[in-house]
Image: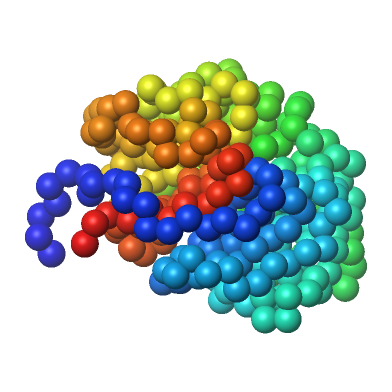
Length: 310
């Protein structure tokens, strides 16, 4: 390996636009592993499966009666879960394109769903201010646990090996240590729209509705870095890490993709970045293994695949 010379350049060359949704696209997730495929969910109540290389739409999954707000994919890519305005979690078999299960129990729309590592449990965060955990191996359709500490809608969550991190409109990031049965709460002070830990779970990235993305210390709740320049005041815009966690990336409400150096929080060139979507960027996700690829989804109805030029 050659020594690292700082962060990789951001994938800013448009490789392909995925156009098929009618209305806003709220979420776009890569398949696991080497990730040849993308799943997107939108205002048109559909989830669509795409080939990220060719841009071809492979399948449309239609069962939702309301907008789709969240998607999570199992490690083996054989199934995924989706949620949104229906107040139920939909579990899907990818090959047949049908729902295998629906889990109801939330009193409001479900903003986020996430599998654990082996997809035996799915966690859901809702407008009703609760997080529910569902055991997918059990016959029962009831949640096995309900976390009720949030005082407002739960917008985002992450399921780790032995912990769950949640972010709420009440301005708190809560970390539940499932082994120790402990809860740590960090008050960020503004509605939380996305939270994502680093792979070593020492720090986490949190985006809030005050035009800030912050890097926080997981064990102390101390602010380690603050990333600004983008506009995010009213809508959920997901922030993520770039390749090797050397950069921080976030789309904003003006349709711009911002990137910062993780260490010194400097905005990567170009500053300001060009406008690449006609409306707000709802979701940004870096490719799980490729250094030079990422996806964005937008309220303009498109998902875009970005690559670094060869």
